Image (cartoon, rainbow, N blue to C red; front, side, top):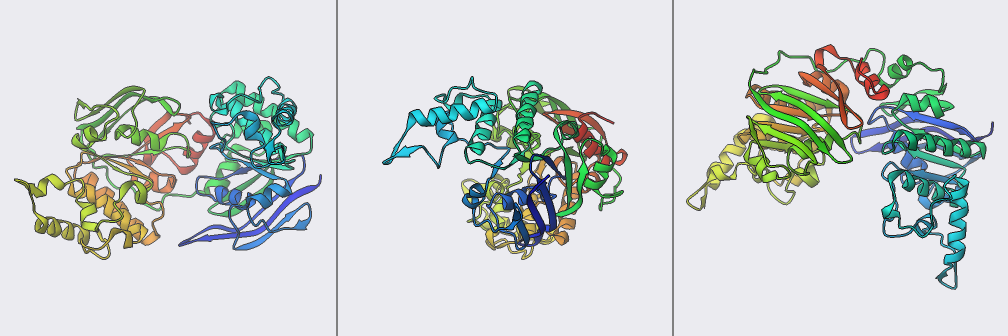
Length: 499
C-alpha cells in the first residue's frame, strides 16, 4: 500500500510548553488511520500543522514521497489534504452548493455559474450516497449529520487524497454513525486516506485499520492494528504505565452540610438528567472529554446558560435559572477556563480584579473605601503568593499562573459558598500549580463546596474527594477519587460503561 503522508520528528513549541516533541505519523493510501491520545496529548496541534494552519519548529513532512512545506491552509488543500473539524466550519446562510465550492466557485467573467455548480454539488453528494440532499438547501436548516456530509463533499471537491476527521461522530446518533462509516468505507475503496480522531474504542475497532497513540506530545505507539489491539494496552499507552497523580490525597474536609444540589439538570443538545450534590468542604471533580459538556455544566449552574430542564439549589434554596446575578447573590463563584477573556478585567489593577465580587463591603453611604480595599487585597495577594503582591499592579502584566491565582483570590475574599473551577491550571507553570492547589484546598477548608473540571486526570484524582465521569452528556459513574485510577477513567470515557 502506497504511503501518502509521512511526518518525522515534528516539534512544535509554544511559550513555556512543548506541544509536540519529535512526533512521527505515517498514513497510507486507502487506509483509516486512527489518532488517539488524551486531551492535551498534541493531537490538535498535529492536525493544525497538517492543515497548514501552524508551522512546525523542526521535523520533516513528505507527501507521496516528496518533501513538502505547507505555507498555509491553501497549500495543504492544493496538495490534496482536507480537514473536517469537530466544529464544522460551514456558512449557515449559504446553500449546500455554495458551501461545497466556497473559495473555488464555478465562475465565468466574475459571475457564479449556478447551474454547473449545482450539478457538480449533486454529483459529489451522490458519490457520498446522499443524492437526496438538494444543492439549493440552506445549510443552516440541516441536521448535524447532513452538515457533515456537506463538509465531506467540500473536501472531495478539492480532489482530496487525505481527509482528517476530528471527532466526526460527536454530534451523531447511532444510525447516523452507521451512515458515516458507510461513507468512510466508500472513501477507502476510492483510495482516499482518512486520519480518524476519536476517543471511542468501539468506533476505532469498527472503522480503523491502524492506530498511532500520542502522549504528552510524543508518539508512544505507531502502526498498531486497530481491530486486535486490546483496550488495556491502548489505555496504558495513553496514560503511561501505572501513572499516578502527582498530588497526594489529603483527609477530606467535607461536612454533612449539603451546599449545592443539582436535580435532573439539562441543556438541550449538551447534557441531560444530571443529578448530584456537593457538600461543604468537598471537592468534586468532573471528568470527561473536551466537548462532553463539562464546561457547559459549570456555566449552566452559574447562570451563564439557561437550562432546558432541572433545578439548582444552594443551601436548600432554588436559584433562578439563567441568571448570573441570582447565582452570585446565592454565593456561587466561577473561575472560567478562558481567564483572560472571561475571568479578568485586563485594563484594571490586580486589586480591583480581586475585589470585583466583594465591592459592596467597601461601599457605605455612597462612599467607596479605597484604602481598606487596597489593604485587604494586598494582604491576600501576599498570602496566596501573587507576584508582585501589589494591588495597583496591572493584571494584564502578570504571568498566567499569577493571573489564575488572582482569579481564585477573588473568591477567597468573597463570601463564596460554591466555587466552580474550569481547568484551573491550564497555562500555569509547574511552580505555580502548587500555589493554585493550595488555594483550592484552602477554600475547601473554609467550607466552600468546590466543583472542578480538569483535563489533567492526575490533577483531578489528586485534588478531588469524589469524581463524576461524564460521557455523551450524562454521568455514567460516581466514585471516591481514592478508588479510581487514571486508567479507570480513560477506559470508562472511551468504552462508555462504568467499571
